[in-house]
Image 1: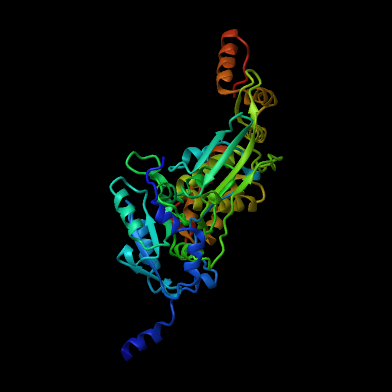
Image 2: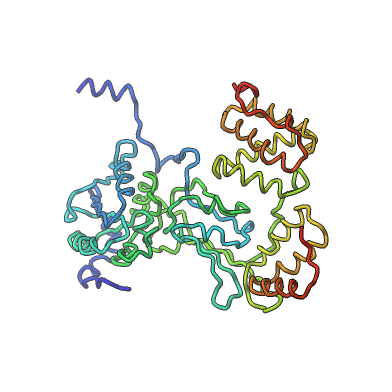
Amino acid sequence: MMKLLDISKKYGEITHKYPFEPYKVSDNFRGKPAYIFDLCIGCAACGIACPSNAITVQFNDDKSKLIWEFDCGRCIFCGRCDEVCPTGAIKLSEEFELAVKFDKSALIQRGELDTQYCTTCHKPFSAKRLVKYSFECLSKANVSEKRLEEAKNYLCMCPTCKKTATVATFTGGKEMVIE
Amino acid sequence: MKTYEIPNEIELANTLEQKLELLKNIGRSFSVFRIDCGSCNGCEIEIFAAITPLWDPERFGFKLVANPRHADILLCTGPVTRQMYYPLLRAYEATPDPKIVVALGACGVTGGIFYDAYSVLSGIDKIIPVDAYIPGCPPHPASIIYGLTTALGVMEQKLQKVSFEHDGDMPPLVEDSVMGNTLFERDLLVQAKRLMSYVFGRKLFDKYIHALVQSGNTKDPKATKVSITQAMQVEDDPRYAECMGILHNEIYTQYVLCEEEDKIDLHRVVWGAK
C-alpha cells in the first residue's frame, strides 16, 4: 500500500482537467472541417473526394442556386476535402467538441452559390464563382490576349454546348488559337 | 422508414420533463451501458480510452455497467446491422425508464461511411429516439467526455446550424506569381504534395517559395541555386531540405533555362546537411 502511494507521488496527477480547463489537441489533429464560404467556388471537388458523401454539392429544386452542404454527423475526418480544395475553403480545424442534443440538423453547414447559365442553351451548369475563378487563373497564366478572349466565350458554355461549338469550329474550317 | 413502434408506456415514461427530473434528483452515479450495434470497434477502443484514469469520467459519476437493467444511459455505437436490430431493441426495452440514449460515432449518428449499405439501418435515431449525438470517426476521448457532459446539461452545446445564403463577391483568389506565370506555382504545389502529402507539402511549398524570393531575382538560376542551397543548409528537418532540392531540380528547371551545373546536387555531403 505504501509502495503504491510512493508511485503515485512520483508520477503526480495525470488526469486531464478537461471539461473545466480547455484541452489542447496534438499537432495535425483532424477535427471538424471548417468551411469558409467566401473562398468556396463550388467546384465540387470535395463532394467527389468525400468517401462517405458527407459533402454534397447539388442544385436546388428550381436550379437557381448551387447548394454546398456538409453533414458533420456523417464525416469520417479523413481530410480528403482539405487535400483537394483548390482555394483552401475547407480546412480541418482543431475543433473536437461536436456533440449536439436532440436536433441533428445543428451538425449541418451549408452554403448557397449563384448558378451560371449556359450562354447558348440557357441551362444551369455550374457556379458563377467557378467561371470567375477559372478566368482569373487563366489571366495570370501567361497566355495570349486572343486566347483569353476565346476563354471568355467557352468558359460560360455548358459541356454539351462546348462540345458542339468545338466540332462546329473544326468542321467549319475556322481558325482556333492553340498554344 | 419507421421500423419500430415505441410502446406507449415507454413513450409516456420517457418525456423530456421526466428525463430532466431524473437528472436533477438522481443522487447517485450515472450508469452507462455500452451497446455495440455492428461497430468496427474503433468507437469501443475510444470509449475504453475515455474511462481510463487519464480522462476519468467517474469524476462526473459515469460508470460502465454490464447490464442494461442497471443503466441510465445507453451508449450506442455502430450503424445498426440487421443482426443487431433486435438485441438493440431488447436492451432499449430492458433499460429502466427514463432512459437517455446517446449515439456515438459517425456510424451511430447517421450511418457514417456505411449509410447506404444494404445490411444496415444507418443510424440509431432511425430506430429509437436519441437524446445526444457525438460525431467523430472515432470520437476523441475528450469528445466523448464532452458529449456525455453535454447530454447531462453540465456543458453547453457549441455547434449550431450554419447556412450562408447570400452569394456575395468573392475576394481575388489567385495570387500573383513570383515567376510571372501561375503555372509554375501550380506545378510546384502538385509536385510538393506528391512528395510530402498535402499537409507537409503545403509547408514545403511555402518554404521553397520563401527561399526563391530571398534570392532577389527569381529568374536567375545562379542566384536561386545559392539561395535554395542556403535554405537547405539551415533547414532542421532533412526531409524538407531534400525535397526542396528535388523541387528545384524538377520544376524550376522547366520554367527557367538552366544548365546541368545549375541543378542542386542532392547528396547530403555536398549540400552540407547538419
